[in-house]
Image (cartoon, rainbow, N blue to C red):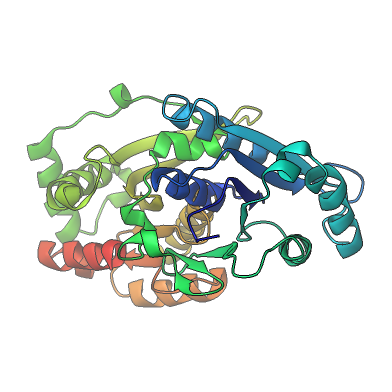
Length: 356
């Protein structure tokens, strides 16, 4: 069996179903003759919190995107009763999956073991390895750091072009939050612009420190949104994937959170939080929130930017956010007045941060 000759795609679904979506979408776009997608997830019981909701949202999104091109594409959900017990995992796979007629009659498969617990990945892999024929190339992993799909047997997946799947797979921000069970609370009509007025306020903000707490800081996100849209729209596959002012919530939440500026590069999220505050403690709290929310929606590969009125403490803030959240300069960027005073500097920093 060649790397692209399989009919069963097997995915392990965890609390973040985005990697599963990326892998399935890439294979389907590549024209691989997939007939059935098996979604293996944890069962909700006394031993563990299940991921059946994430599995359902993933299935609905893939169905809606491929209902016209592949109307016969089928999905099977396989629940694991104990994702910490290797024997139980292998038993469930044998009984609930490998005994199915669909598997018995057409055993060509491919497992992407990116999601799930370590025990899930290990024991599903081992169980399916027993079904592997000599010479088959059946296993892959999505490298989140470099956005590459890697085959166990030969490295980079041959149909992935340059290897960067952000150039191949795109998801809208609306679909991304829906995949994670969120919905938008506000609408675009809540966002209004006055470019010349916002520019004047921005220039004053960069040179005057007084009365900031009495200012409405919305001008900062509006001004930066306009600059980012002007500078980076041509670098994106989809021209409408720079967004502003999305208030997001889950159905059972009484409150919501806001992303001031959103940029989608393929399936990678960059979220920005803007504040005119110049008190490091308050800015740091907003930094924690934007980092947490971006990871919550976009996974570990998501990026977060905090823009503030800090003057001399911005470098220290950057270091503290990296250290205290386990992040790096690859996925956290802090910008203060020193950068904002020079348009070339802050736009270059944003560009290098997002697109490098």
